[in-house]
Length: 72
Image 1 (spheres, rainbow, N blue to C red):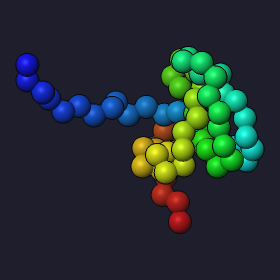
Image 2 (cartoon, one colour):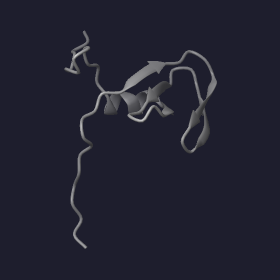
Image 3 (tube, helix red, strand yellow):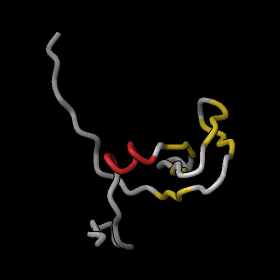
């Protein structure tokens, strides 16, 4: 078996940063989100929480056309 490297396809997601504790109903079952976590809506409408450090390493802001936006 030969191992190969892969990169995720670039997709645009919607997300918001929560300011309170909440339970998010995910495809795998309920998960707790903490203040500061990002709540992501995936390509099939599913939602899941993401810790801020992981979110910042994985996602970047885009404009309404899906183009990257620099924040200053």
